[in-house]
Image: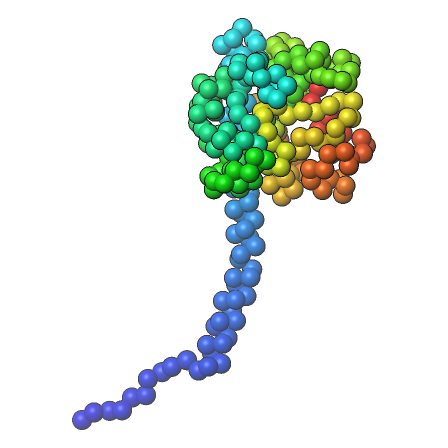
Length: 264
């Protein structure tokens, strides 16, 4: 004898309710997942800068207290050969050339090529000034404080007198301001990054000629001379990105950056 059993099934209303619940849960979870991912990228970037900062300290210890050299490539190409880092991120060839990282004076002390690239930096060779046509990511996202590693800003920076402020070429000179109060390496914006020289004119000419990266919740990271790393949030409403010549010297983000750049 066979019994006819009617199979249980979801009604259309029940299916719609389940779909609605899934959609609500997804709406609640996706922002949290996105926030967690962004936080992970920020932590990874800060770890990169910490490794580079430690490398700078070890370099100085191995070189009689001398800081690793830092020169602007465009204006002093002959000195750039001894620089902490080589390559111009506005050149499509340089922007994707890991070999230039390896020839930098700091590389033996921070020898992971990935440490020089912010994981949130999506810029590629297509984005550089020389109209590169490759899709490979740039190899470097970070630059060094222009007041560190040479006397350029004090003696050679034309045509502005920068002498009231100090440059630093030895670790002992950092004690005047304490190493924890001066940054060495900055996460730079993909629009302004070129050589590895983060130019900050203390006399307010060319404000934000090199602009900090804003890839981490409108904020950027700085590695200080004692190798600790801080996240700086962009707060001034007028700080809307790279726009040379459009900033007021009282811009709070500019003032804050100058405060950790050098001293008189």
